[in-house]
Amino acid sequence: MKRSHLLLTFFICSPTAAFAQDTSLSWQMPMMSGGRMMMLPGMRGYVPPMEPFLPGRNLDPTTLPTAMPSQVIRMNTGDTLLLRAGFVSRTINGRTFAMYGFNNQYPGPMIRVSQGSEIVVDFENDIDMPTSIHWHGLRHDNRYDGVPGVTQEAIAPGENFVYHVRFPDAGIYWYHPHSREDIQQELGLYGNMLADSPNLDYFNPVNREEFLILDDILLENGEIAPFGKEHGNYSLMGRFGNVMLVNGEPDYSLDVAPGEVVRFYITNVSNARMFNLSFGAAAIKVVGGDIGRFEREQWSESVVIAPAERYVVEVLFDRSGEYQLLNRFQTIDHFLGQFYGQTDTLGSINSVGETPAATYHDSFEQLRTNSEVISEIDGFRRHFSREPDHELQLSIRVGELPQGMIQFMSIDTAYYAPAEWTNSMPMMNWVSNTANTEWVLRDPATGRENMDIGWTANTGDVLKIRFHNDPESFHPMSHPIHLHGQRFLVVERNGVPNPNLVWKETVLVPVGATVDVLVDITNPGTWMIHCHIAEHLEAGMMTSIQVQATD
Image (cartoon, rainbow, N blue to C red; front, side, top):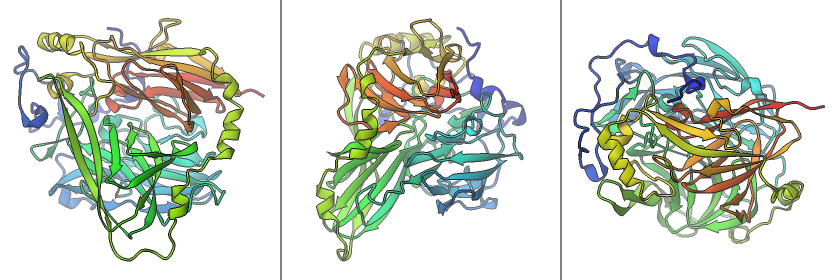
């Protein structure tokens, strides 16, 4: 199995040598859905072939700073934020853990700026692993993109790095590590950023704004499940948690007044999990995506959001009572070969008290058409129907896996779901790792894969890229594909034109799907393209595009 460029970004500064072996930590076989513990033939006694690792396991959480809820920090151009990644004490479902946090907060500070601002972030690494910060979604300077081995060296424990962060576009963004993010992001290193438009009529009037960061965490017998020290595991499907988190908490709660309209900025920061989010019976109006507003606002019963995506929705709570925040989906039990529905209650919004003096029912009932967005996109429409400049096939290559697992998987993929909503094959997922599993981006025009692809472009180019998720691969799975430093329009899915566009930089490509995106190339530098399932990224599913500046 070819591994020459695998894990360039994340293991160029491997932290393994800095870790002392923890002989008290051991692998525990994961449960199947419904709490069953079932073993495939030939897999008894098989465990991930690496040392289990859990940062902070030997620390006493009571001696660490108690993590606080995220605080909003409003910043102006030229302001400096001192940002520190360190150990914190977090309590989840009654158990207290040593975890990570930015500035002792969960999530990290919510950075709010005006569109066009440029701020300075003086970052200090006070965790036990090399790290960096990627400013997800921003079209800013390449040297501050936060990718070890590509734009900077990994920041060693005890060291710092000064980022200059620019916000050319209005939108909701987030920041997170780009070094072993399968560990660091899972343990709490993430935070939101919001760039406000100077246009006072940019969004509809609302009674309030709230931020929802969706996540999950994997607990085993009341403890955080260990990670692979030498390299990542859960490489097939990604690390799905079994405890859902909203803003770092397992039981989100918000009080509103009857009749309030609330704008929610929603971000999915989970390692692998898609969410299908609804607000009980409340009406949902989708108004924005990753980078700004949709051409037209639209109603939706729920919001499907993949890892790294963002959506902006407005919700009317028109009566008194409780509205449950739900994640509802249907999935397949691969072991028993049957479908089942599942609902996760993420929290509740409680509508209590008196109706506010200012109500915005009339504007909420109207679906706006955003003429400024349509006008800007008009300049790109001539490119929509042309042939793609590049294609990427999404596939997988596996090495030495247990024979029973290979036999089961070959039968299992007689049926494949367009998207996986939960870890329905936990045993097989658990033993897969970056030594035996490689996720692949392949350019069919050249046959080159991952970091060997070598695309180039010039600023001012408009590239059409086609993604095809190969349903015939060993284990097809949906992939949220993220492009650093640029923006794109999702113009077509499976040959059907997209009727309502929004600027994005992350798109979900379901199994068997073909998705065409149109990339506005404006930003010089070397920019990553990768799957945002953290474990797929660790298993090599990344490439880059070199953009040259033109006069």
